[in-house]
Image 1 (cartoon, one colour):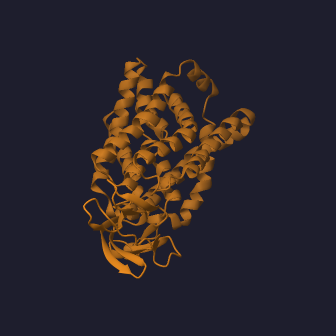
Image 2: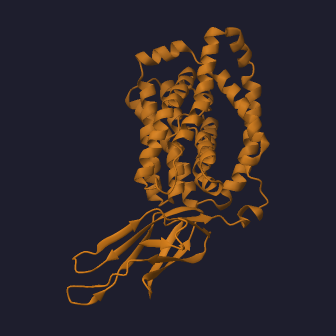
Image 3: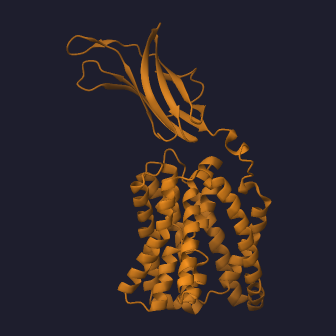
Length: 406
């Protein structure tokens, strides 16, 4: 019975921050009486599944036009994105509860970003910069060289005494995502931003963890091994965590969680590290050759990373959400505290305590940033990317402060 417009389309577009109307027509013109004999007419209920993108202001009955009945739905658009609608036609009749005549969930409203958002800023989005694509092969080679530093004997030792690794897995993939969700609820973060924070908290240990372990008196070989293993485990745990929390946040219908792209991005890290391990034991000469590239390539990647970070900051943090700053600052501190306390409870040696603490506290925020930027539409991606960007800045600043104090 229900249609919007001429019924030829189920997706409609509105600009950001605009008021508008939707005309819903119905062929259901049944009139009945309630228990007191009063005449009743069918009524329309319209719900937006993402109120941050689209809010329903009111629904008014415009009366009959021949056999057709019309309703005017007043809306107010918000953030850019896609808001599915639930449209229900109800007939009060004689029943104690309104009879559901028809329900449609196929209509969607797309709120498009203002064209002036980036035109006025004069910024070129970092994803359009050729430097990004020039850095990708360097990242692959650097990770491969990083794999050449992994000691198989250390990995075998962790199988006999897996306590640090188990602590790392529980902290990285259970405690931290839960903490991200709690922060999202405390600060009442919008859904896209909340999902960005949880994906950030679900990432494995960062590539810089072994460097901090070296500077802070941790176990460097343990740090390298934990980073490798957590990255491999993240290929399953990160998509699983994203699926669980997208359901809890009820964003699975409004935001597409990119499970395949999360997996592909993680494999881009795990495969070259694993390849480097194979090269070390099958082709030792090639391994020595690759190890010479770690320092110069790392310098180039750091320099390129700083440049890209500047471009990211200019576009992503232009309209930063204040609550995410407080949340982002607390994430590394909480991870460090959880890691050190749990390692101390298991009476691990002091270097191992520090390494476990760093592995849980210093997560791979840049991986979360890459996942979000490669998966969502530009404006939606930049909005959600505020979380990993703030966490990355906070983590770097806090760890450098700890190094200076140490």
